[in-house]
Image 1 (tube, one colour):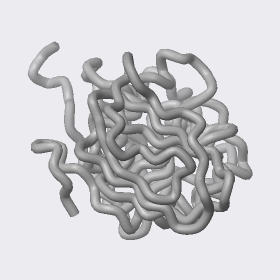
Image 2: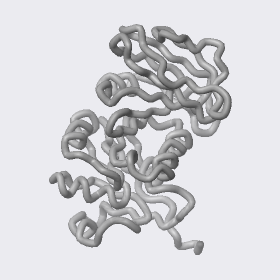
Image 3: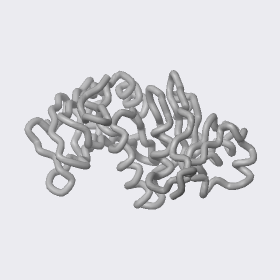
Length: 239
């Protein structure tokens, strides 16, 4: 690549939260649900079409711009389009790394191509300093922070999927995780259940995905806003 290929663009800063749109399927009702919790709209490349179709003009669009339709690009003020031509990262990562906000709710990134969806979870792991909720048709996924206090009803399915070696502690789970060494090829923690009420999850390092039903989006959003995050450079807890 030549030296003129842009890899950075202006940051998008939001005080409340950002709804981030991808190119996969997005229901208008889901967009409204996300915007109620994270009111500033940003799109990753072709995801801008969902906002325009629903009458919500994206405040910024990031990506390599290989999938945004010409008529959609023409409808968006040009100063909001940030083309990043490098091919070493996905459009999801391009957008996420340019957002500075207390929380991101990402729509349109699940349920289509499996390789694209796996790349999104890699993006969560690569940006442990971000509070990002990936919302799908049935479930939501977050990169677990160092400590999460979450209020869920009894018998709520809660799954843990490690992307690396991770250990942790829990209160409020039917099957506690204390002393369990998680690893993607050896030990995972899918289909655990909650006892009900406020539960606590703590982890010794980044790399754990937490999966619950999308019915609990509001509770997870509240908990993630209150949680500390991981330092991207050291992997240590960082407020």
